[in-house]
Amino acid sequence: MKTNQRILMVLGFIGAMLYRFIPFRPPNVEPLMSVMMPFSKKAGKLELFGFAFLSILIYDFFTAGIGMYTLTAGICYGILGIWSGIYFTNKKFSLTNYVLCSSIGIIFYDVATGVVLGPLIGGGSFYIALMGQIPFTALHLMGGAIFALTVSPFLTKILAKSEVNVLEFDGNLQEAKVRV
Image (cartoon, rainbow, N blue to C red; front, side, top):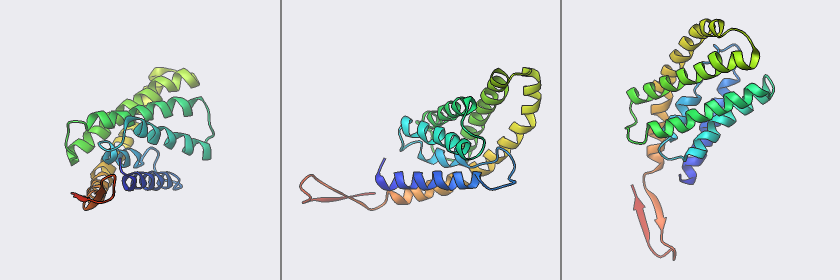
């Protein structure tokens, strides 16, 4: 990934994190997945994992504190980063693919963290966790779809513009090639 694309990824990460700190916003309605997806063809699996894992770590650090849930949720979200890279390997960036990738990722994340890990870490019934997770996941899916339809295409256009007319120099700096 080129330097200007890494800078865009960092700016997207910061923007998504700042959004998460807006008080009184609906729970789990956040743009992190939609910011991550447009970078999934350029970034490596480790960068995508780090993007996702750090978002959980930083948010928990400033809000709820670091704990076992931070580690498990961070790993699950890191897997979503890798998932987005795998999903878009042979797929075009499109509204349909953004919504599908986001929706599949959200369902995995909510089942893993809310239904399975929640009762294992915090105790309680799997049935109660499942019943409580349904409205939470519905809201999460709605927010994910809205951001996938708006933020992801916007970032894709910005990334496409960042690739146009970039000069590449050979080792001797004697010849320049324009990469479009």
